[in-house]
View 1: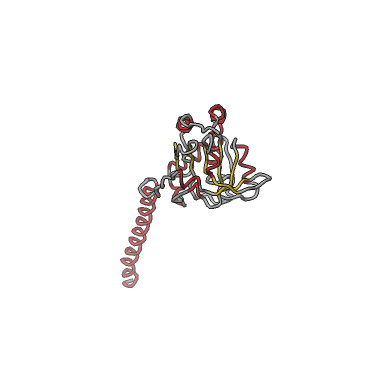
View 2: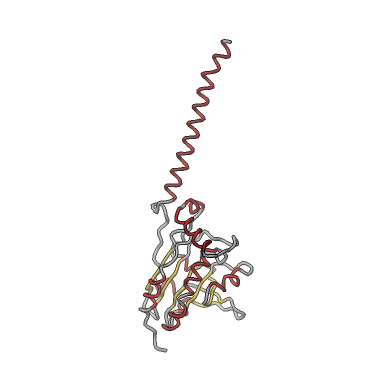
Length: 228
């Protein structure tokens, strides 16, 4: 009897210890979620200069493949360029579709709409094309994702804003797949003609952080076409 009674305090200490561990784990999880939902620890983008962007090597994806400097794209009429995070991503398809809704206005301004992807896997680019009404190029060295490439890893799935974006795109009927690397954040650029420079630079801060469409159009209207 005495030996049985002597075991009870040890059991109590063990139970209290388990509670402490559980509360500690819960506290750590809550702290992690809170931190994930602040912008304090997000990597900050480095603005891309015109000199940096125009030297980026791109590859065409048509039947006649060629490699060229990106500066060719906006030399005469400027350009709106989307750096796609992942062609199969339903959030990227949503943004591509919304950017493409500006195509009539951009065409009136004489401003082309382009996209770059950082990899080509299977038919991913072809499957992305119905959502994007412009030409798509391959940026193997990920220049348009720099100068300082940024990634959002697993912490992104703990962000409230990301889940809002997921629900928004899903509710709008977009779907996708998990093919390819999707942690490198993309963005959208509006680049003026010739030496006019970068008129708008939007960098994703989290998955599904879309560019403001009126801002794109406003920037495109500032482009001054160059004489041939």
